[in-house]
Length: 124
Image (cartoon, rainbow, N blue to C red; front, side):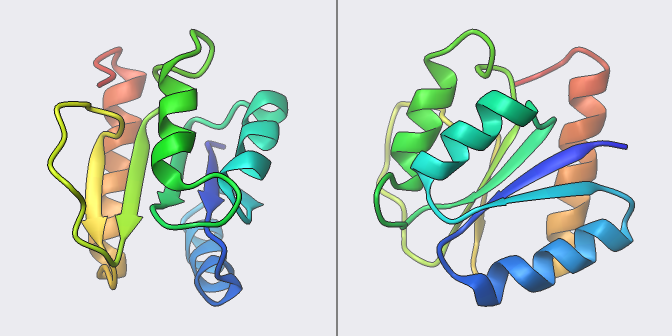
């Protein structure tokens, strides 16, 4: 069973996403901000992370920078969710960027694709 970490400060987003992903057969972990997500990632080693962009304490971009800067977490596939228009950047901190509200079928498809690529050794 693959483990997915969901990171968002809005429980109204986390709860339904958790239920949908668990129904798809994934083990789902939750974190309310990037700082909490760092701790969960260090302990649980999820196979994929879905994170919000704008969060208190440590936002999604800073969280992704942290992950990419450490060998143990640098290759974890990341899906960034945002309601805001992200700035243009040369950094590639995530594998997929999806705008909220994202159709659930699209999100699940992206998650499946990224997990499939990571299993075949073609991580981003």
